[in-house]
Amino acid sequence: MTATLSRIREQAEAACGASRALGVASTAAKNAALERIATLLVEREDEILAENERDLVAGRQAGLDEYLLERLTLTSSRIRGMATDTLHIASLPDPVGETIEARTLPNGLQISRKRVPLGVIACIYESRPNVTIDIAALCLKSGNAAVLRGGKEAVCTNAALGDLLRDALKRSELSVESVQVVRDPDRAQIDELLGMHDVIDLVVPRGSAGLIDHVRETATMPVVAHGEAVSHTYVDEKADLGMAVAVVDNAKTRRYSICNALDTLLVHASIASELLDSLGKRWAGAVTLLGDPGALEVLEKLKVPGLAIEPADSDAWDTEHLALRAGVLLVHSMDEALAHIEAHSSRHSEAIITDSYENAMRFTSEVDAAVVYVNASTQFTDGAQFGLGAEIGISTQKMHARGPMGLVELTSYKWMVFGAGQIRPA
Image (tube, rainbow, N blue to C red; front, side, top):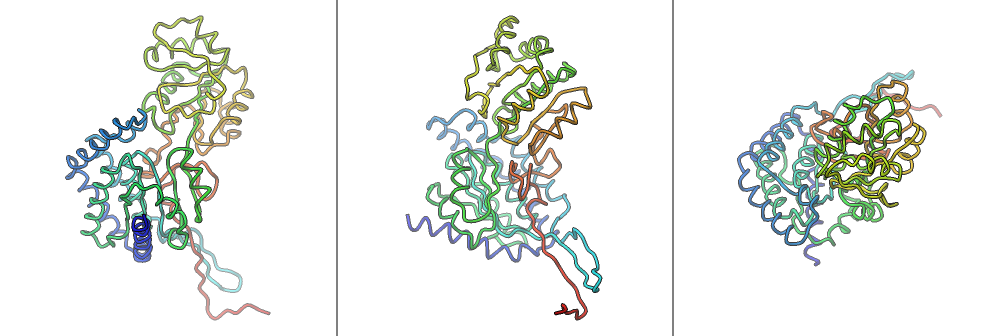
């Protein structure tokens, strides 16, 4: 046990040691490293898929939930998507060194504020091996060293990706120690890592509520959490119903296992029958609807063949389903919809479908969430979709970042003051 714990300390200190040079590395050197990572992802596709299959077999034998298996799964298309996203990050402007503001004070001092890397970022995450590449690429481009601790369910895949990252860095101008992938699945490492405020500047947990809570309670350094999401879509009485059906369907079924998938559908009672009839026919045999009494009454009258409906229990409105299940609640006013969202939102992604400009503006003003949508699917809450290349996580807190965290959100700033011998009067 002691050897395992000391190994993670060695990795964190190695990342810290590499961070100073990485923080001042040229954009060209960082981009070249990212391009090498993208090339190796394509070249080693078969090897990565073989290791991923080992994880999937072990996961099925261990009885992993279906949504975790879906998140764990890599395919040729997903690996090539990882390579494409890495190249996109390389193509983005380098935030390091950007002048945020500059001015000359009355006493002649020239003062400016410039972006600088945070330093060393640790990320603790579950299931998704693509996160290993996303975070490594974002950290490298933003001049931050990284310590990455994935879940035990992806240990083989992450080991292969860790080897790939080291090989790419060996062939670059950046230190091979800039990215540390923790391979040992011993959970005791997490607590030791969370005590290393002397070498780690920020920790980002991504995963279950239990993981997020543990990191928040234990970490001795700042935490930006990417946690559970309960996402709502409200179909207003003034909505285009064809648009509403298409958007709601996409928000639920495109990928049901991701954090921005629809969990609760709020429907204005005046259009409930028509909307739920069209949506029910599309979801028959696929999505189970958990209805409040009003929604159940409408659905039972519609009798859509093959549509699974169940009464919603009290937990339904606070559940991130990560499955082909969705709560359905009838409301009679915008006030009622807003009150429900305020009571049950996780502050992640919330949407309204409406043709009313007034209602849209009220929704965007009054809903407190990292991302608020009008007439669009919540599944767009994603760093790549927002033009950020990828994201280290989606923050639902308000400091220091909110929403998808891209390159700029992985920087801080420092003040630079140039003088000509000025001294402060007594």
